[in-house]
Length: 100
Length: 464
Image (cartoon, rainbow over all chains, first blue to last red):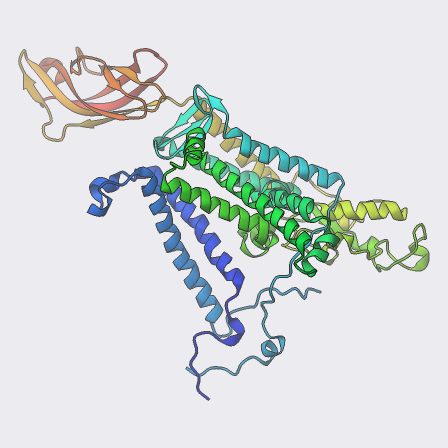
């Protein structure tokens, strides 16, 4: 029997995946913002960026930068989780509560 | 793609991902509970209090992102001082390694914000909903007026605390007194509001609902801390040799006479555990080393008339009746690294000169001949004032006989935290200037001679 599916029924996503995706990407975004904005003043966007940013304030620059980093990192985390969860035979279930 | 037949085992089990069961940690008192309460009060006191401290008419601790400068009490750091921040982060990581190798997960049990705020939220829960058994009963019971009142009060307190926490957090990045005024008069900017709400939401969600699940499923440290563990690390452990076989018995009766171990299987150690584990199953990565099970077991052992310490802080070596070595190579390497970096950090901070001078030679001409048999070289000087006050700086140059400064003629004024670019013209008699000379430019503040930098440059004259 041929069947094409995106997610095998045994490796469905779980609520904790949301945390597993969002939290590490949050940390990565914090680190990226720290390093990036230590070297780059967001006001540079006024001169060097697209015209949309011609009147941008520092606060918005930081916030948008952070959200941008978080978004990109979230995408990477989510793809990682997706690949691990959907790998045939490659996904090990969470070490369950049935310890010896 | 051919799909493999669905795994029969998994089908039988339904799903591997059982919904997390709600954990009702039982209230506990004792040595470690007191220690944790002390740590929580101290850390929260610092967090909520320090934001309001003043220093020199400004906020004592303020990471002023809009102005791109960090005020840390007497010190003001600029983006150019990024090295200190990096060093500080490395120091923090090394301390974590050191303390983990020495005494296990002290961080998790006492200092992690997740633990600290969860503790605070649990106190509120206990105050509004009562003890563990009352909370369980309340959750099972119908939505009557009492349940509505107790749950409602808890939510109101949780939300207010979360909002205040978000406000305080943002208050470390934008002046808190101004922020308070703006929030009260509803004139705060959209981004300030966004961060306040985001951090409030994180506090409410993490400390109110996720709790131990953050440690179990989200925390990377919980997974890799075992890399810093060895047989001599202090861990919280159940003394299996002494406790097993476990079983109920009468108070005061001898366990040995009945062929039993000291554990009476009262499960109090499981009930008090904030992450809901059974420590008697051995060391688990879910254990945040809070010591609640030690407190619970000690009280039971005392009641039973047996010695304390069936669950205790110990090492793997001690559990196997071998001597524990506290001073071991791993710990000494961590300590040495920590001490070296801390010394370097302190030294560089103490000798930090709050001015930076960059000298760039004019790219257009090597030199220029000017009136009176003089050779002139032009430089572009970037002067960065990293002090909190404006300064006037005087330029001096040496390295060629009779080297004079034709420009700048007046001291260079640089406001606090800004960069001034000035053109400097240096002149030397043609007779002395032939060839390439190493020269030194020195910049010193008019009002405080201690603020002084030297920078090397080249002075070029015609070839002989």
